[in-house]
Image (cartoon, rainbow, N blue to C red):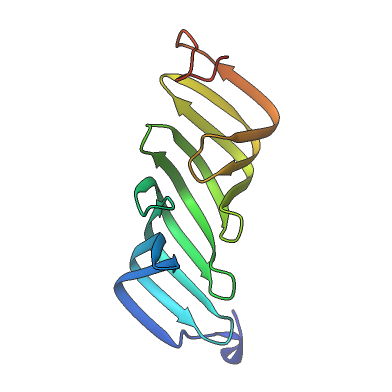
Amino acid sequence: MAAREDVRLPDQEARDFTLTESAAGTKNWTLRAEYAAMYNREQRVDATTVQIDFFDREGVLYSTLLADRGTVHQRTNDLEARGNVRVTTKNDVRMETDSLRFINQTGMIESDGFVRVTRNGDVLTGYGFDSDATLEHFRLRREVRAEVRSAGGEDGFGP
């Protein structure tokens, strides 16, 4: 059991929490959570039952992330998502993993774990993942497997 002084209580707590990150008046992403705990000294927000909507340069929604838990690092606005993580794009590309990181400065998504990407019935799986938030340009790093059901072309994973 942790010593009493090791337990860190949040500085603030909120239900039905919303946090938006924007630049030059354009919304980049919006995080919604059932519950959030803010830790001022660590400049961190821990949230549960998380939904994050990502927007393009014109402020149009292009992908949504759902996860059991998430963390916002307020110094950088980097995001971490953990537990049943699913990202779905406006083009119906779906990525599933146990955990991922969104690097705010570069707009990149990273995961070290097992990842499953589905597009038009085609399924790619593997370990380690790097992508832009649109999931249009991604890379699986190792143990990559593909199950191709579409005829290829510009909408599938094929050439």
